[in-house]
Image 1 (cartoon, helix red, strand yellow):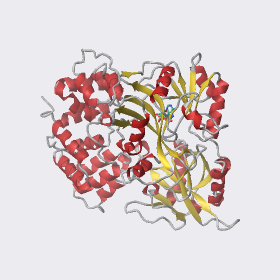
Image 2 (cartoon, protein in one colour):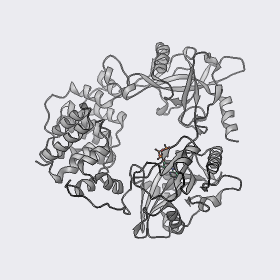
Image 3 (cartoon, protein in one colour):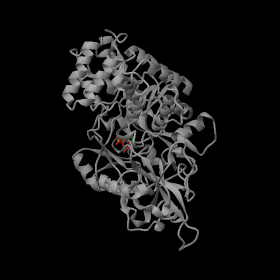
Image 4 (tube, helix red, strand yellow):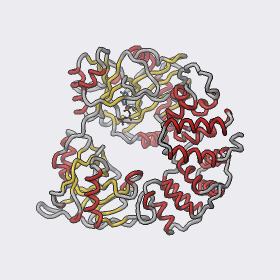
Length: 606
Ligand code: ATP
């Protein structure tokens, strides 16, 4: 049998079986039997890319998240947008009589809708045909084309098979088996090889024979490497103890995009942590890289950020794509992309990951000529240190004792940076490692006292376990027309989901449910006492139909706030969390916009 003849229904049986079975060992052995009985070694990739869709980079992105997929499926099935089933797909997160138990799981809701339209019999789609159609789906540029590929898939499958295809498109099969186990069952060296190449096709092709061991392969320029990651620790003392006796460097934890720059002459790649090549960064960065990286071939590890030339500091997280786009269009701006290299993995014609971090820092110093606000290196006593105004914290420091770490951490927090990373200067760079060679320490959420007591103005349905029920809230700040007068308007300001136990959340929902006003497709304008923007991210699934009926939540958050374009208020919170529900506090004592802005500005030192 080959992938030309093996039916996708066989793979679906494996998926169904794996999903039902609780035992990881049994899942693994069933996977092995599938490979042995149904796949020729030459076809491993065809099957495994469907089992591990999130690791497959051979085809581009489908550009189909649940909401667009819903619209395409509705068209592919020829349904009216107003029909009950179409609304179930669009409002897939919501519960209700029909969607019931499946709410929050798009693939299951889709399967229910498809069940009534597709026969039980499989259309006989083969694995090869499925891969060809998925290629077509990824390469098609517009919705009509995507819709026509989906209708072809629907013709060739039954609802069960189509459900799995939807999960493959959404890149999450929920099989209850780790990618590590799949790799280990496939070949004992598969994970290692994947970590240094991020190339699933190559892994499937090179490791066809399970009994033949593969010599450890080193990294190569042009092939993304699985990023080394940091382990979280709770405080400086714990971090110091874990690195006991080691030479330790502490670095600022920059808040941008983790990017590996691969330079091979004029060829440059910008690989993200998910090993996508972000070529858009080339517009702002390629020339700088060519001119300021002094060796022909190298791999740098670091963070892509935005530098603001008017304030002489890094901009807040989140504007990288916008600035890359502005650079492409040649627009003038005070903001520019800036790459901070904190490591080097390859230099000249050799991998350097086996050398110590201390040695790699020296190589990095020689390989890169820093250019202020464009290309920086993060090494102790050099690089970015030189650019900080005196008195401000440096970005990287050799720590001699725990007090050094604590001081550095405190300064970092005061500077409103994300946190710190501690690294063993004697350690190698390990692809995919999170075992504690790098430790991260982030500021605790700062309790914002009773000052951040804000009103619930809307709710969002959850997914997964919380599907069908409101699981997140849209919060509002009061707009006061005069002191001592009850506020009449509330300005949307942030969205929050975490912090409450299941019992606390259920109690809150019981109280609020009678006042939910649904905001389902087509979305209507909000109740008149709420001010929101037109940003779709902000639009909740339900509104609280009057502020007097609502409840105040006490919110804690990362000490930093972010400027907000999504919400109506000028600032929002980063990493907000519900501290407690204030049933005791009346709705009209909600924090007002002006007090919040004052609070933000005073904590930002403005
Ligand atoms: P978080 O959400 O806390 O960033 P994460 O899961 O994305 O966590 P971690 O492994 O916990 O990733 O932290 C490492 C990340 O921190 C890196 O992927 C990188 O993007 C970022 N980072 C920023 N500054 C540094 C630095 N100096 N050294 C290493 N990583 C850094």
